[in-house]
Amino acid sequence: MSNWKQASTVRRNLPLQATFEERLSGGSSSILGAAVLSSLLFFGIFGIYIVSAIVIGVLFRALMLLQEIHKQTVPAKDKVNDAYTSYMNEREN
Image 1 (cartoon, helix red, strand yellow):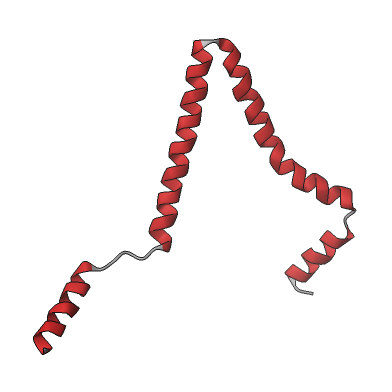
Image 2 (image 1 turned 180 degrees about the vertical axis):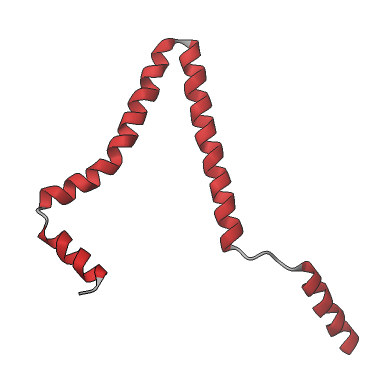
């Protein structure tokens, strides 16, 4: 039996509650993070400063990751090759 068939049969044999708990476990860390960030707000201006620095840092990192994904998925335009082909087309005409 191949690995993906074996994994799918194992998952089917799990009770419904286990799959629900698997889905829920991914969100528990975000709930915990939100609780920590909101509790920092009670420290006054210092807590607000820390929370805003964390949020801005996370947003900045997300934008950097989006830029990296964009670089890998969208091919760069080769200006030299475009100029050469246009030159050759003009030369032929």
